[in-house]
Amino acid sequence: MSYKTDYKRVLGLGSAHSGTGHWISQRLTAIALLFLGPAFLIPFIRALGSGRDTVLATYANPFNALVAIGFFIIMFRHLRLGVQVVIEDYVHGERTRQLSLIANALFWRGFAVVGVFAVAKLALGA
Image 1 (tube, helix red, strand yellow):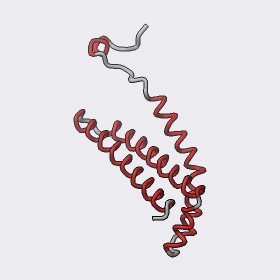
Image 2 (cartoon, helix red, strand yellow):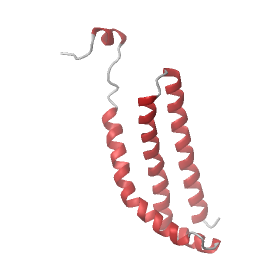
Image 3 (cartoon, helix red, strand yellow):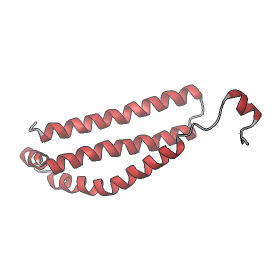
Image 4 (cartoon, one colour):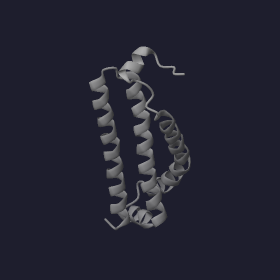
């Protein structure tokens, strides 16, 4: 028994079977950010306003550098997933929706790459 209408069956429209994975991914990134957020912010706030040498020393520590890189990757993935839901719900034109989803993916992934590069540069001695 199918719950699709005849119209949907003819057009081949139906579930994309990706909603559960998206939901789980968003929840897992949120849980990860609960731990990575404070682990990133505490050294960041301590180094904030200090000189260049203090910042370099903070992120020369491999733990701080890995936490910062993980934070940027997971935070921007979480942001991308959240904005994707907003676009899917509120952008109605098919072409505009597709272009918005592509721009969303490129925008947040670009920020993640820039964040990882910045931390790597600091960790390796700028």
